[in-house]
Image 1: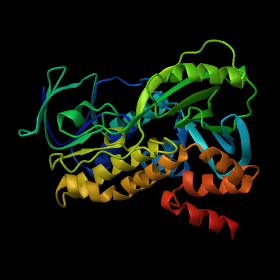
Image 2: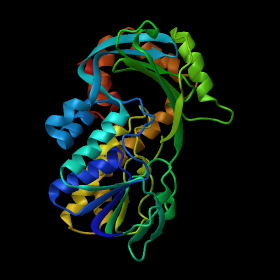
Image 3: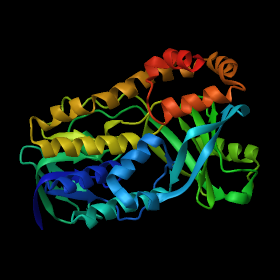
Length: 370
């Protein structure tokens, strides 16, 4: 079969689906393509901050609440395995199971009348013709192309863009009663050395994982097994892993003028928290708004619209480089130990909302003192 559309979107994860939903609402003909069928499993802690929650509400409206499997207003912050502070946050954290969340976004797109081609991978692309050939034999002609096919994006490589710096993360889900746990968000900085570990509620389960920059010989699966034992979790549980972007965004200036990268394919993830869902949704929506405006060069308009996202990440990379220095954890211990109010302020004003930037950490601290 042959398709001719204004905008083709390859990858039906959160960034691609957010783009497709926004285009469908704007009345712009689009086609959503994914090599997998939904629902499908995805490695992800599933944490949803306030800024991400607001985007989900924008996309799903009254159906937004159906995607969450839990929430928490309590945070425990650990430096390695030592508890530094407990905090009640003003902006609670919500949680999703990705197979449910991703399917809900795809369903919303189809509910709005959108066409999904699932189980179809791109096997060939002609930039000059604006044409893609799919594994099922279909041909897709497009005026604009949105690449949303993940951290290991094949389209990104085919279009001549470099891959971003990557981290590796691993996780598993354990029964709620498998260890002493009260449903709080637990963050462990320094496990592994250049990353962090997490414990999140996930429905009737608990998501436990860790991730970060991996060196030669690092075995995050073994580190996670050891971490589980130290938490008091017994038994064997399936561990899943995935690569995620963890550095500067991809330089898109060399892409064809009618092509953009969104979400993980663009290297869009917070280099400190690892949060990717916010950047996935925000960049997908931005790409759709640029495609719908038809106001200029698609790529350049999109790069202007996502400048703030790239700035957040670049500033985070600078902090990240200092975070893993040998003396940083002892310094953090002095700053945050026992200071639950300050920890709550940081999580509410920086992590949950980006009301402060990473370059404004000193101002954040001074404002809290006031």
